[in-house]
Length: 135
Image 1 (cartoon, rainbow, N blue to C red):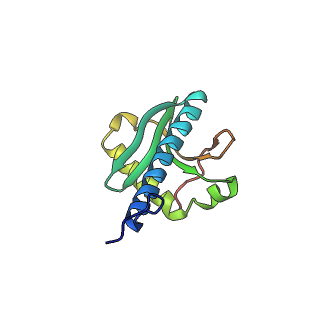
Image 2: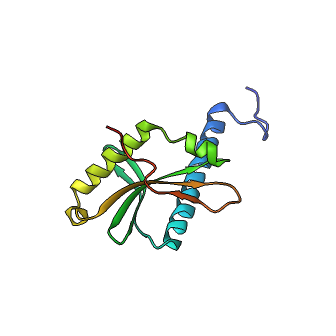
Image 3: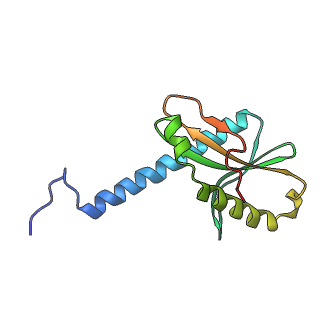
C-alpha cells in the first residue's frame, strides 16, 4: 500500500475540503449580506430558513415590507446576476408561501423577493424585487 504524501489528498477528501470551503464561504457571505441589510434599516427575521420547498437565505423586514432574500457570492456583478435563474425565483416564492402560511402575523406585509450580491472588495449590492416570480 502506497503511503500518502501530505500534499496529496485522496479525491474524496479533496472534494470534502472543497465542499467545506464553499459552505463556510456561504455562511460568511450571508452574514455580510445580513449586516449590509441591517445597515439599511432592515431587521433580520431568519437566516438559512429551511422549508420543504427549499431554503431561504435571509428573511428581513423593514416597516411593512417583508423580503425573502437570495444571497450570491461571485467575482463580478455580471456573474452574480447571471446566477439568478427563473427556476430559483419560483423556488424562493414557493418556500416563502410555505413559510408565510405558518405565520399569519405577517399577512399584512408587502412582499419582496430580493437578492444581495456579495462581491470581493466591494460593498454588497442589494437588488430589491429582482426575483419576482413569473406566471
